[in-house]
Amino acid sequence: MAEHFRDDSVAAVAVRIDAEHPTGLVFDPHQPQLRITDLGAVRGDGIFETMLAVNGTPRKLDAHLSRLRRSAGILDIEIPPADSWEAAIGLGLEEYRARGGVPEELAIKLVATRGVEGEPASEDPAFCGTYWAMLTPVAESTRAGRGTPLAVTLLDRGYDSTAAERAPWLLLGAKTLSYAVNMAALRHADQHGFDDVIFTTSDGQVLEGPTSTVLIAKRGSEGEPPTLITPVLETGILPGTTQGAIFTAAERAGWQLGYGPLTPEDLFAADHLWLLSSVRLAAPVERLDQQQLAVDPELTAQLNSFLDQDLPVSHPQD
Ligand code: PLP
Image (cartoon, rainbow, N blue to C red; front, side, top):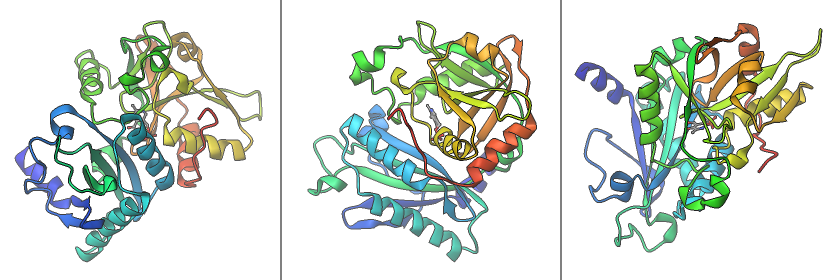
């Protein structure tokens, strides 16, 4: 285990952003960096993004940066401008080149925290918190596992479908650092023989996975393309960039698109079901609780080839 950690960490590149280094500064991720009073560490009071870079080009960069800004707005956290994040990512890629080459696939994580209470890191509000980018080669197991059908369980998220509107302090729809609940749900699923989770509201609407967006397809009639449907955003789910990019490409290809509300019954009745996310891409679901679902490797490959086009992301519900 220790060896594994060391191997992974050697390959990671980290870049911090602060007022003195608005375009980034490479740092050693094995050395202590974060103050133990940082609110990101002690309260999960921060936000993040994870994107995929293929052959040194980040996918859906604009969509990830604009969602980072959207999350920052929901939490009322100040973050550096998009130029800073882009420059920091560029610096990280440059560091790989200097080390001998950029890995074919990188997961790029951007993190912003509120910083240390009462001690802004800078007088410039855009740099008053703690900010970094971390680039890590995508694990071989993740790459090899793409396309492997999943067994998924439905779990109650514990709030109803109006909570996002009624209780904005729940920060629903923001990509916050507070993922302990999401990770606990995945452990619960694992203990019960499932690979992943789809959250539902207490009044029976489909939300999202702990790290993914839900997508269903209904087959078209002979020779017609399928219809893709994803849950509405009003329930407080994260606007998925993978779903948005697939929808842009599918619309251009003449496919029909739809937005929920979806119920578990809609998922059981769907022809196909996927969990979508930036690094795992479109992951087909072959079992939802006790029911088997049909998987279609060709259709999954088609969705993933839509992602290869790296088209702009649109969310008509925004
Ligand atoms: N929903 C949640 C809660 C997530 O954490 C993620 C990604 O991590 C997604 C959806 C999928 O988002 P994206 O497709 O932008 O990676």
